[in-house]
Image 1: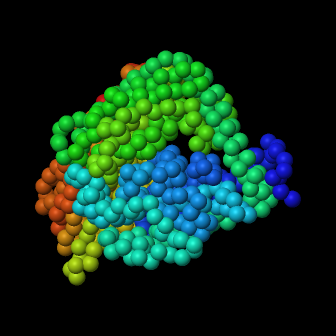
Image 2 (image 1 turned 90 degrees about the horizontal axis):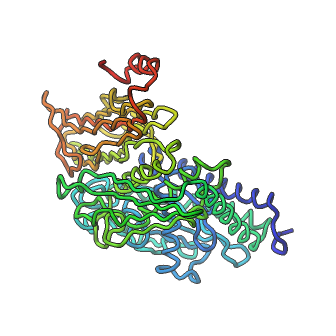
Image 3 (image 1 turned 90 degrees about the vertical axis):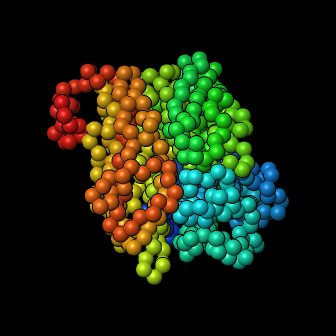
Length: 554
């Protein structure tokens, strides 16, 4: 018996909604269990989601906000501009990594597969993985000095990697021939394909019970319920326009020229308009973002704020996006024009999220924390052995979260636009000629306040191979994470080469720095900003911080 002939009841809708979330979680587990590279399997830089037949996100795994809030944008772009939906069959898998076709940056390869029931398309499933390398100027494909996207690696236009169940071997070969670690990339790509089939099978089982019409109806109503919850939350926020500005240090090419991220957020009834027109024009270096990336930050900020004021939890999906309008003219760093380089687009989205939180604090002063570290500390090592064999390690380090109005920030905690884990020391040392010589919390890095900001961390790598090339894509070395309500700013980052007893600063945006055996790279990350007057901090909390070594001095 199916439900095609009748309207589904609220219990059935909730059963289907939870089943869709479970399908996304099954896909998540599949990638985790079958992937090859440390950046996917250990760092967990991937995401999985389920979409309705029109390309709207209806359920997602608990993974990366930067991915999850952009995948719908990409899928709808594919359906509208690149892939004829009538030719996209149930055994076809479409992939792309092109930011100018709706993606984010080249290391992120996204794969989609449609799901059919009795000849009718009822959904899509999608996976996105940050791959260890897709070519380009520097290992890890995170070149900080690129000035056009052509230098950033292999661009894959929207194409069918699998058609009618048959692999396009020429495309697989072309990808493998253009990357530094083909075994790892192609292994992770196979993991994505397996994940898609796991999700599709789960949806087909649901459709066998509820029918095609039931699945389509459930998708519409799930989105409508999230929209209603989002509008109710926004209606609790005070009307008005709230503005805030934060800054990136520079783009890595035009050094010392800061990049402005300005938000003008207008709340009117149950809807919000976010005007990004005051952001800097796009820059020469790779600190640019496409609209898909920037809009992901805007939506994440609004979902966080709605969750803070909403009385009951609500499902996060594309329905939450409907009450929010983003204004971002093309040609800005938040909506770059081809062929601008965009690999470090996460720097823009982190800082845009900081600016969004700064504006939202004015509307919701009791709910919004101070700035978190707001930056991905991307470190890439390409080691070279005696026999010229090479290993590639990509690490994405983190810092401290901003203090909340009611509690201290969290130390060394993945926050904001990413939700990564760390790569275990033992894994790195077993697979690469690198040794981690120091790793831990860094005292005095959280901003002072009534509530203290979380601490940043220190991580130090020693090169044990004859040669190595080191690439860094980082920020927050000039403009510190801000405090709120009188709280102090957090620390600035530091990157140092330790060689022969000498400490030499390394620019935070550097490509292919030559290292030799025994060299150490030391990274110190920012903490989070403080909240409230530091003089109002509980003396018992101050004593505890000193006893634990979180702060030093008087």
